[in-house]
Length: 183
Image 1 (cartoon, rainbow, N blue to C red):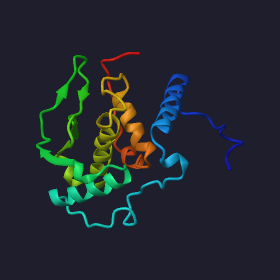
Image 2 (cartoon, one colour; image 1 turned 60 degrees about the vertical axis):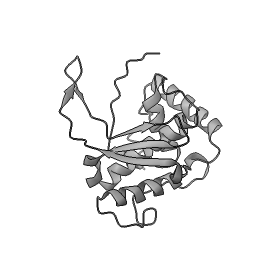
Image 3 (cartoon, rainbow, N blue to C red; image 1 turned 90 degrees about the vertical axis):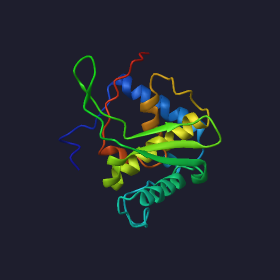
Image 4 (cartoon, rainbow, N blue to C red; image 1 turned 180 degrees about the vertical axis):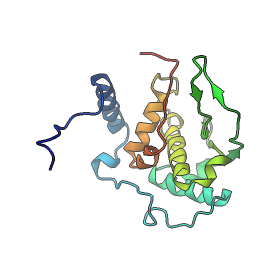
């Protein structure tokens, strides 16, 4: 409609565009069924999440089980724990704010362990994004597709969430990954 006024352009610089395209190709080779070949995009609606959510630990477990289904992870193979997420404000050597972890993943055995910050329980959709991110670690590191030491590990993990159709849950929780690794 406004093509005459605003020329379409890619929001990424050429290096970022190349990274996104290359990693999407890699993900397509790794996973057969995904949002780019017909899998439904998961939305924060009762159609996708019919269970009532009240911010409790059992409700969070139901949410995790539902997100497991969308990411093709067996929920019986995922242990869920909670931790206090009210750690003090942290800054790096440049004085920049370092957000505390909303969730963590630990694998290596038959069961994956996901820990979620209790502070996340109040916001169902932010929690769904955190769960999806940690389950992307299960799909990538837990299935030994990556080691977790890659320079772009966290970015690839978020892109995997998008790839499985749950990217909307990360859209309102932008992350700035200051990596210690360079290419």
